[in-house]
Image (cartoon, rainbow, N blue to C red; front, side):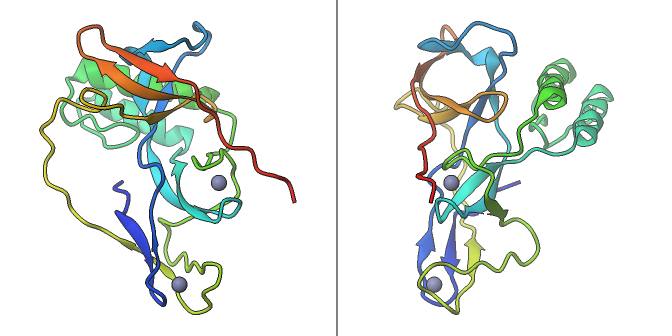
Length: 205
Ligand SMILES: [Zn+2]
Ligand SMILES: [Zn+2]
C-alpha cells in the first residue's frame, strides 16, 4: 500500500505532511537488549497506513497489522512460490528468502498484543484515512475535508538508506514501542547504528 505524498484541505488548501513515512521493527523476542548497533537481519520493514491522530491533531502513519489469517495466507502463498506484497514485498526474493521474511512476520503476529499504534505518539486514538470517505475536518476550518495527494517520484538507484546520511528510521519493538532511531547502515558488517528515541509523552487533559 502506497502512502499519499501528503494531504490537502479542500477548503483552505492547508497541506498536511507525514512526519514519519518509514519505520522498522526489531524482531528480537527473547534476544539481547538493544545496544548501540543491531544486525540488519533483525530489522524488518514495518507496513504502515495513513491516519489522523486525535491526540496530536496531525496526519500520521499507523502500524498496518492485518489479521493472523492474512499472515498465515501470505506464508502459504510464498511457500507455494507465489509473491506477496503484504506483510513484505517478496517479488524480488527467492522462495527461501520469502519464507524467512514472511515466516518472521507470522511468528511476530502470533505474539503481538497491543493495538496498532500511531507513530507520532504511540497512541491508538486515531482515525484511519485509507478507508472509504474518512471525511476529516481540521481545527479552525469548518468546511474543508482532507484529501490525499499522490506524486510519483522516479526510481531510486542509490546504495540504500543509511549509507550517505543517517536514515533516522524509527525502530519499533514487537509491541510497537519506539525504542530507537536507525541512523547509519554499514554494508560490510550488515549492522545498523542506533540512537536512543522514545515517543513524546502527552499531558493528560
Ligand atoms: Zn481547511
Ligand atoms: Zn499522536
